[in-house]
Image 1: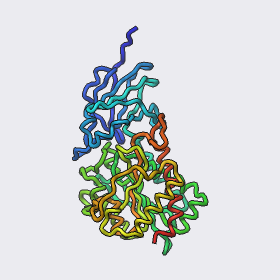
Image 2: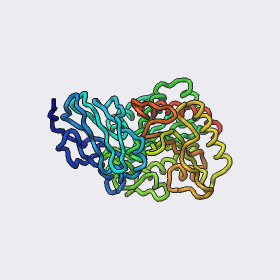
Image 3: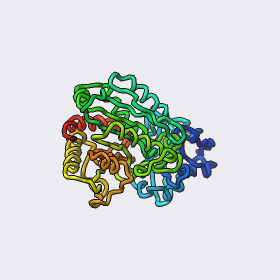
Image 4: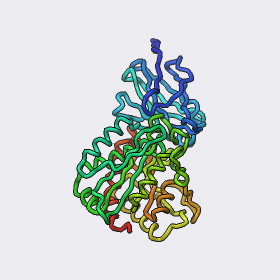
Length: 382
């Protein structure tokens, strides 16, 4: 029996939405494209809703320009995420033929959302900030503004007493890397739990947290840039109030309060592992910093089965670091342990989960292990 499929409606006019419809006339094979970032040629992030699905029938979606995206090699081995309720996300089988990324789903509900990774909505961000400042050991220390005027909150966990170590975590400079704010939610979860490990950490250190550095880009469904088309993680030498106020604010606050450790949370499109990049290419790199990097990695490897030290980026040659990156710039400016933490968009080859791949939940769990690492290292940082 031939089943006539109902027409499908494709929408992305919502928080973090991104898709262009090329041809939705065939419900069995919908042709789409990813929209570039505003004022930029970068694109990779997608997030859209498909409505009018025929229950029990298979619908295919084709991102026809995937092969032209910013990291087109990343589609090999990648599987899109889907959700019927925007709460529970699962992977759907996806194929890349060198030009287009296609994925299909046998509909269990009349509507479904698809995304590059489990989105972290602005509404959830607002709830996270509200929950954080309601904790007895957390305050809203300062608020910056994005290009479009969205709040960029700096939280401090701890009492700000003299002599305490100052440990910074920022997240989502690249707005499509939503796992970074899921990681930050894990930090707040642990602070709320206020267990013995957290109490020991906050007895000797304060945490300075910027949960979302790029709210404009995240809301607009960008991969890489802010509203002005600027890559914030290439703006740490020439940040300005006009084009990169997000970085300008963070640097201003770091100079005001000081930095003893800096962690910049990101997602990597291609590498299916959790790893860190460090400052070995900085002209000011010293054996002290090298030892702290090694110590951090060794401790976190022992605390988290998800973290590893085999796979990652090639090391920078001595004196050849890109000083526009936050990790290198902050490490040099404050002579401190400074790391970029990368989480995968794909599954995690060290501990695969075919249902979810790397996920928001796993990002939150990693944050707890990082805080335990901080606690063990705080006294060694200076």
